[in-house]
Image 1 (cartoon, helix red, strand yellow):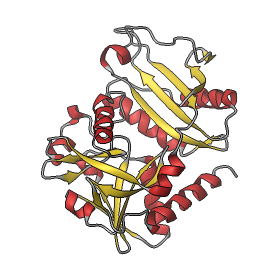
Image 2: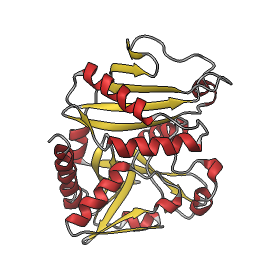
Image 3: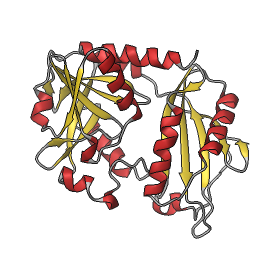
Image 4: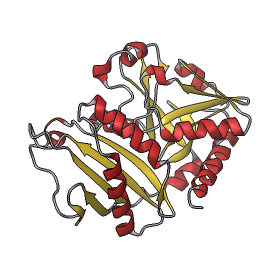
Length: 287
């Protein structure tokens, strides 16, 4: 991924090679910052309002305070116009600013998309389960654990992805105690039995994915039932098919978990249908 354009609150467009944070910004000192990432289709960010609302919630949870979503929307428009990239990735960051200064920093970044996503989608990905060692319900009821918050404290998430690759997988799936399925490092997790889709409930402290919500609407429109709840890993592994969802990777079929094939061991029909529905929904925002 390559940074194409950058806009900073109070400054406007900034050269992507120019430093924008001080070393005493709490985002650097303590990883106390919040962010959002969304895919850009034909120059327009998908579900920007929903991402801004979630960003405001995350900022409040990490005690950044009230953020200026109108300013972030303006910064996003500036960066997107400067990037002139029809298909890209938009990231929005808010930090508390310099230690003790009480002046938040707001940033919009436009970057190229990761390569190889369509090839991965065609063959399907292999997941590796990673134990968090936490009771899912305790995690959800402990606000200091920041369940459901999209903060920049991503070291554990990135370490999990790296561990999955060391074990021969493409991505990870987090498990709570009792092997309860939670989410991926940057994705929500889904699986199917017949015409019913299953996905972990938000009450488990997982991220309320914007793409997850969009897929629920698309699944309902297609006549598929969606059941949210607390499910063990074995329920996922025995499914007819599985997939993950995220803003950038969209719908990604899962063909294997811990070296055990899912269904036929190939991308399934629900993942393909929902990927097409997601692209149609993205096309609607361009009209």
